Image (cartoon, rainbow, N blue to C red; front, side, top):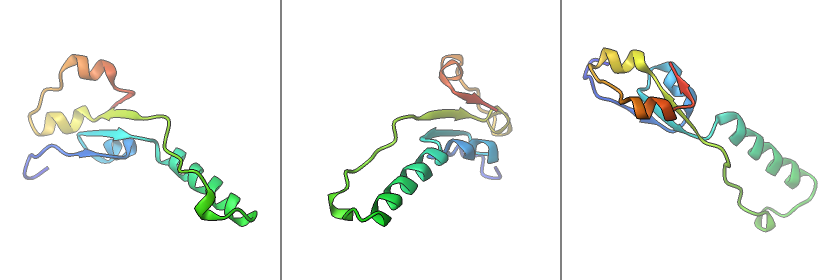
Length: 86
């Protein structure tokens, strides 16, 4: 905040911690995918034969408190697309 530079992060929950904008998959979804892969390996699957999985849902979170603190106005059309506005 001291330098008044906007920051965009990958994990949506970072917007709750002060990031201006965050866009990416929810961390819980990524951790569930990891758990499924680990379970498959523990059941005997060979890691090299497992398919690559990518997240299927993404969230856009915008922190208006941070925007106000750095003197930035967030356009209304961007706010309307956000999944979470703080």
